[in-house]
Length: 358
Image (cartoon, rainbow, N blue to C red; front, side, top):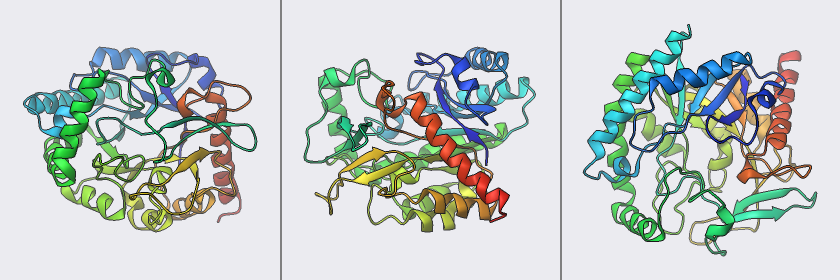
């Protein structure tokens, strides 16, 4: 498995040289940006690849090409947006081949909406004084001023409050089966293009993996992940394995999911969570994202890495959301110091497994 770390091609708070300094990392996971429903142009991808090459780095995974609300809700502009997504995949394949890469070329994407990952605890201090983010169904939605320049966590489209409430209503009306219909249409349209371009698509589980405040979510357990890969059976139709997201749903056995579905893993995220209280409220749990090496965490990271190592999984991996440490900017779980620290923990486990041939 190849270690990597995530960066934003636009607006990253760290210079590219910092990422080059992370031990063991040769290729990055890059958010290329781009507006939902619009083509990400080949010339922009070539520019990013050139900047990476200048500091001796390559591209391991694109995270993400955004699936628009029009696609998920099957609005009138859906087909136009699907074709834009297909053209983006063609551009990605062409840009990578122009750099001499042979593939597979990997993409992490999700089918959540109208926001992406959902948190309403944005600055909770743990017992070690690390600043953590999380979710508690008993707490209100975050205020706009808490989000800074991010209109909604994890989603690049800016909404007015009225537009946002309208979208929430549309998702609730559509429901889970409506979203499954939209995902099925989307995969049947894009996977043949992905196959032509040698692109492997890895669908990220919903985060958290339960319906948030009556907003429907569909990719939240083993049965859902099996359903996804069965829609269009193909190496290009795979999974981004994120046990931290899946673990927010208490009944999910992330080890059992990995045991059964690891051949479909295109990419792996690792983060840890702690539950804030026992049980749930209307199917929602309260949790805090914690440090990767946390004995109180709900994600059995060493056991998962041991299983994937034994199976011969070769998917790239990265340390996902982490607390703010050493006074560094939390950046909604994307502070560089803590993620690099988390990655070293993951690398150490895998190095030990390799050294002792476990």
